Length: 292
Picture 1 (tube, rainbow, N blue to C red):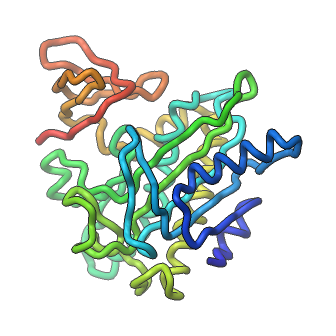
Picture 2: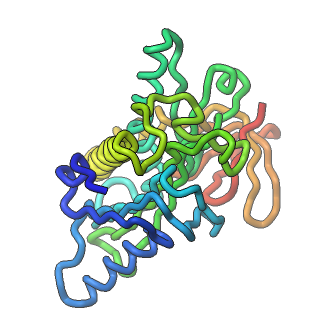
């Protein structure tokens, strides 16, 4: 895929017709080039495909979609966390960047129909959802458009960490091919896809290029903001959050289940949940379910 917008924006763009895992492939490239004595892949290098055959998400869950319906993309962030926000904020920053890239497609569809645009936002800690007014009134996050998986490269320290930021964005999966009833795509959710039916056709290639360029541009901007103006980056993340202010059920790694209300993000990006019995719980790992 040519990806003219994305290639103009980024220093190194590599497209694969098929890849077992873009995260694994980019991680291997970045590690091999660095260990070989060369300067290695630059900050902002991107590897993407429309046919990822062995993708995985958080907690090693599988992520596989029909070919030419979704984009799996991995972007290399160099030296993150040397100043400003720490590396644990990166999944939230990536989620905010994806939300910003996808929202215009829903706004355009709503403008054509003369209705209210669905809202794209981030369900803590690393999923991008779209929800309508009924979802919002019920406290539901809506349906999932994108998952994010960030992986640290070896090394790191005072000069920050090198991180592979992986995203899987559902673009053209038809309703009947969605993997679960909690998932959706731009096409299935009624967004403006420019008439695309497959990422193999001209309109689909243009859609993929537009989404990748908008996402990458926004993520690199937010990475700079997190370093230079961390409070502004935190505020941006909070504005995109679908979880803050809602009743939640937290499934902790040890099997414990806790209900409460998500109130804030801690200094490291963890979720602060107010408990009904008083006090609070700070959640750094676990599954969060939105309650009505």
